[in-house]
Structure formats: C-alpha cells, structure tokens
Image (cartoon, rainbow, N blue to C red; front, side, top):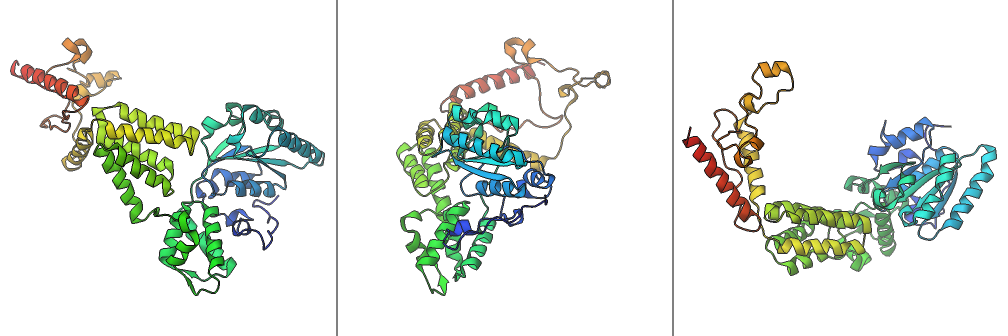
Length: 436
C-alpha cells in the first residue's frame, strides 16, 4: 500500500462544483493542517497503514466526508456511507452484510456515518460489536459535540479529531481552483471578500455560491459586487463576516447589554443570527460581557452565560438559540459593574511598568527542611487561626512596595456588600497597624 491515497474516481462534468473539486489525494486537501500536516495524527494514520475508528467533529463543509473517502481509498477498503438523517438499523445491518461479504478476500471495510449524532442510543450501540471485532472501521461525522451526542461506549472505541472552519486564505485557494476548473472570469476583490465572508469557513457553501454566480453571469469580463448581490439575493443579507458591519453589530449588542436595554439587546442579537453569525460566537461574546460589564455585581450572570453556551452545544440551532436569548435578557437586566475589569487592566499595567519583585520570605512555601532553614514561611500568619478568619495588619505585598488599590467595587448588586466588607477589612488593617 502506498503511503498516500490513490486517486478516486473522477466525478462527471454534470456534478456540482463542490463534488468536482473534492480532493482525490491527501495532498489536495485544503486546510486542517493540524491533522494532516507532517507528523500530525490523521496523516500519521494514512502513512503508517494503521486504520482506526474515529469521530470527525467540525462545522459543515470542512472536509469530513472527504477525509473518510480518502481514508478508505488509501487502504483499498470498501466504502459504505450511511446518512443518520435518512438511515436506520436496516442500513446498519446491510453494512454488516456487505462487510462480511468482502472479509474472506481480506478486504477492509470503512463504514462512514454522516451526522452520527442523529442516531439514537440503540442505533449507535448496533455498531459496537462489529467495531470491536474489527469487521469494519467506523468513521462518524458530526457537527455537534460528541461528548453530548455520541454514546460513551462508541466514543471510547473511536478517536475524536476536531476539524476547523476553513480560513480566509484556505477559501481563496479554493476559489482559485474553482476559477481554473470553470475557466471563469476574475472575481473583483470586494466581491471575493463578501463571498468568503458569506461562506463563513464552509467550502461547500462557497463553491455552490460561486458556481451559481458564474452561471448567472456568462461572458462577463469581471464578476463584481453587484453581480454577487444579485446572485445571492436575500442569502447575502446585510451581514458581512469580517466586514465593518459585522463588528458594528457586535458592538451594538454589547452596548445594549451594558446599557441595560433588553429589547435592544435582543434586536441586535437576532440581527446577528439573521445575518448568519455562528451562534457559538455570540455565546462567547455573552460570556465576555458577563465578566466585563457585570462581574461581581451578579456572579450568577457568568454561570448563566456558560450554561447557555453549553446548552446551545447540546441542542444546536434553532432550539439552542432561545437559551442564548435568555442569557441576553438576563445580562441586560443584571446590575452592572466593570470594577474587576478595571482592576485587571490596572494591575496588568502596574506589573508591566514596575518590574519583577521577589516574593517576601513569609509568603513563600517551605516544603523542605532547607527552605525552612532559610526562613521560608517564617512569620506567616494563618488567617483561619485569627479572629474572624482575618489576619489584620498582615502584608501580602513585596517588601517595600506601597500597596496600590486596583479593585474598587461599585454600589450596585452584590458589590454593595463586597464594598462594605472591603471597607471593614481595611479599617481592621489600619487599626492593627496603629496598635503596633
């Protein structure tokens, strides 16, 4: 067996552009170099001759099916594809029979299950004995987190490989191949940028849109932005990933949450979804808002934002979007504080200009006898042994350093009580210093 795949059968000229451009060798694959680069795990499987069961997890249009086909071709294995959306236990039984039919000839079988997360527990369990016996190699593809959607028993028998959305550079390379294959005119740079933004890392989406764009403009010397807008119409919408409006919309959502306007926050959030933004990206921004703009005024906000992100991973769209909307409204209505964010930036700036100061001896750990002999930890006051669990007057700063104040709680939400507690601790510290 050669170390790299043999060519797959050529698709017909009538096949969609995405199918005609499907890589036939590993070297033709664009992107996923963290898996396919020299010494990386999937490439190592190709080159070592060791075919193993795996789960390919990643967004649509990033090459999951292509990698499965290339894997089967590289090992001259029978390739059986099952769609979990349309298939069932009957398809699994037929796959088993087909695998058994070629086993006497010593030929391997790869069973590829697209959208494996759509299969229920019993359907997934049906693969287990055959994966364990080595009758076939199982390759599942999913856009959902396998930790939630794939049975633990099946997951333990397969290696999970995470595929990434194609980068803008990858998409440009793909467009260049498509243009060469179609003999198409040049694509104006503004149109290329919008088309790449519209595809959002999905190769199939890019190629389908590009093929339609070329077909609608035969004989054009240059394909420009108006042609793209006419071709895609409502699909293109007003939202451009990577463009100015993309960041403007995010900014508007953030400011509406910060400004405690739930209706405006919902509006901008749904504008983002309507424009095609990945809801996972919106979820990450909500987690950031919970830390930056709410902080300790309502610590529940961060947990709720994280719960919403995790729930979206489990449910996907459209069901999971409601949970994100719930988080948007909660964050907008929560008491606001940027005190921790401000303290973080101030402490970071202070450290950058102050230089490195040694840790005082009394704050150092002393796990060895030598360290104890060198007075590591000597004089440290264990706060739990002090009255009220607080060592009044103790210093936790480097020697000779004036103690700056980074964190100043605001008079909102839980930080009202935090501020009162901090004032009391500072009063006790001052009293202890005066009493020395």
